[in-house]
Image (cartoon, rainbow, N blue to C red; front, side, top):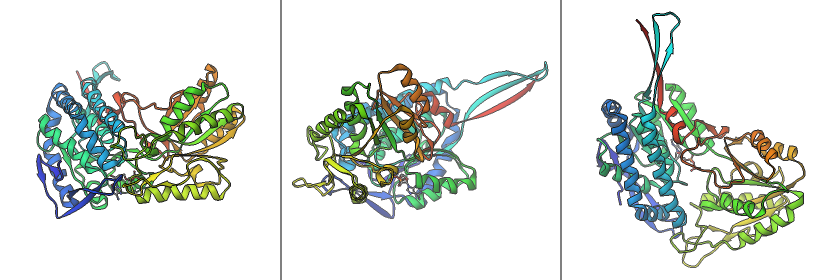
Length: 475
Ligand code: ADP
């Protein structure tokens, strides 16, 4: 297990360390060196030095190395998944799925790098030709959250590398081990020194070092809207190019004409993956009157059957929350909803499980959600499904769009015309139509409104890491 920072091709220590604990048991897993601001500056220097050589290689060479990293992740899927479950808590089967998902971003990017085609545009006189090139933006800072410790990195790393950028990664301080494991595999894949650098530790000083350095030309961030907004403010000093994938508050709508089996399965998958700690998970359920009782009954039954515990244990589908602060947020949303009249059909409290830390929250279904509740506007980031009833299509589109966020939305219907109308009416970057799990490495993942801007995945991601340049050529 790597616990040092990767800077300029070398594993480096730091003056301080951060402790990584297992959220299921509370046990200390590792002390990871904190590179701090100095580490970040060295990493920027290494990335800056490596950039010309890396950008000067052929797309095929770069792509082969990116694909080779993906292959090594797939080879080591069991080891990487266990490491992820240990530091993040998600069930092992989900962790394995995330490693495969993470590898798929690299594989797609390796191919897309070969399709960074330019244009030749007609000039304004017979002698003029306009040649349009796409070139790498340069040194790229990557800041990622703890809920998807591998996939949020490769989603940025793959296209950045394939486009010819060199990178400095600052993973979340709660889950640095998965990031460092990717770094170790990158060394095995043969990336030149300085192309991929990883600096771990307290975010403030590292973030400032990345934002205040003119050699860094791009920041790709996934995390909370609050931190994203703050980083955007700081980034203005250097007019740093930004991609921000921020919070969400997804509506999940079930119409009377929906296929209920699919709607219930979609709701479970969408709400409870990663114990509800994802930015695309459903936060508000709107169920049409005609099927309200049946849907809620079936949903409650399915939730009641979910097995909660240490993600390392076979059969567990809901792991721990990441830390006590996350637990307190979930409890405050639930307490607030209870005080405002919500009724609890399943769950509604912490669970204590023998021999494990106090980090488990019972999968919960509450009815009577109203706009005055915190849970209606803020991300809960926990396994709590709040439900309300609605009558008409127009009404529910208005309710669904009544949010500052615009990342993901879901709805279930069998009416083809309604399907298009509703999909077009939802102000969200990702719409799951009869689909509770729309994530796909080839799709343009990203949000609207306070969920940020920029798109990640497939060919769309390449735009985030390239600049257009045109050459005006006179014959
Ligand atoms: P979450 O709610 O998912 O923890 P955060 O926005 O707090 O989201 O964290 C996402 C990423 O942003 C993490 O890598 C975290 O360390 C980083 N981060 C938090 N504060 C700062 C900061 N001041 N400067 C740079 N990065 C930061």
